[in-house]
Length: 496
Ligand SMILES: Cc1cc2nc3c(=O)[nH]c(=O)nc-3n(C[C@H](O)[C@H](O)[C@H](O)COP(=O)(O)OP(=O)(O)OC[C@H]3O[C@@H](n4cnc5c(N)ncnc54)[C@H](O)[C@@H]3O)c2cc1C
Image 1 (cartoon, protein in one colour):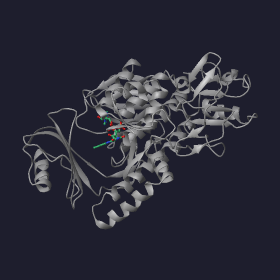
Image 2 (cartoon, helix red, strand yellow):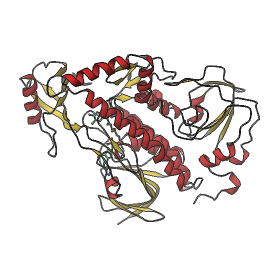
Image 3 (cartoon, helix red, strand yellow):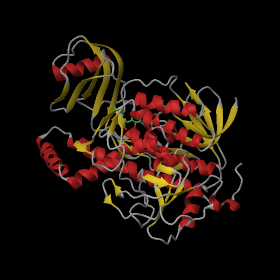
Image 4 (cartoon, helix red, strand yellow):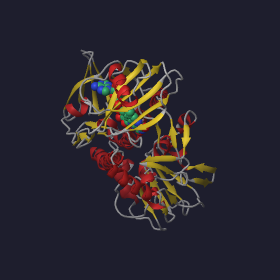
């Protein structure tokens, strides 16, 4: 048996694992991904797009254009009805229609540029951890030793199970068959509603292939669905199977809704679907997985580099668990509102009426787009714990777009007040950037509206605000710097 050593081993090269690997590589942390699939190709359809906040975090790393140039913009998010977000104060006030296989391809190319090794066609089969390391067993009999193991291995996560992390939640109440196949007759395009639920037949990127989503009469368990199951369901719903043949993918998804009780067990952490599963309503799963990764990446990097204590990792659970908890709730609610009975339809009409009003629309759309997230960092200025807007700044060197200073995933102290008011020397060594700038535009947050202009803000590498000075005095900055970005330089222990 051969054993190799890495700072971090990641199980799974889905969107979450790829994003997290990129974040760690940007921070200079040695990471390797183990992926069960032998090739990057993704069979079948899964996510269909990116929400505003996900596009923003990609923009913070300078890679949003790669996705935007391949996708299609839609000015609405969906919760029960389409909700307009074109008035949201962000450069990315739209949903980007782009299928998961393209999202993964673009992320994989970025990770490749950052020279992250991906061991494809191998899977993690188990692990053992002690106080200093994790020994990760692979399906080919080899093993890897790492300081941390991250389970980005999807909803059926082996890492979660092997870590003994509970996954409480709700069993499925409905299941859907999803397939791509050819048909010898023209089908009935679009949606069809009946007593069982909603069914859909639509075109795909490939003109030869037809995409289907069919609600099953009973929740399907266990056995993988076959072409025969699809044909039978089509006949039951449409009276014909339209001569369906040559499927390229057939699978099933359900409204099972569960969340890991904890996101960390010592040296093992979970992110993405490994930590939370829910039905695809509103298209949020991939999006919150990528945002989990961006929350965890810089924290894990600082812990691995001995800049911050291990307790920083607990803020990952504390911040991200409630975000997925909200998604579990809104997808359960959206699922119930789809029920085809008259009472539910009456409820749905009232919900539609409410969402037609400006404030409820902004509230729900803020949640669906991920733009309204506020981490609980205590009381204070409304920006505290919220995403920093991508301001157009003016500096002595010329105009500067705020997100560009986050490209290297380093924290930023933005001083919009008296130049020279801050001394960051103890945090230098490329750990915290100081930007002196002016900003004359409005201060407006999505779903919240106008907020008072701050004098200075401390921005984490994930783009969330860790500290705000609302007036000329700025108490608490050294404490915030130390809490988030480690003690001042002289006290450092060198990285091992
Ligand atoms: C029908 C459908 C529609 C959806 N629509 C949307 C949408 O519109 N928007 C949205 O945001 N989300 C959507 N989702 C959800 C989205 O697909 C997932 O949330 C997303 O793929 C999660 O990414 P992940 O990287 O966490 O996990 P996954 O994408 O599941 O990736 C896990 C990876 O780990 C690998 N793996 C598993 N076990 C091991 C192991 N033991 N060792 C090594 N590798 C392993 C797998 O091969 C896989 O590549 C949809 C899902 C479905 C089913």
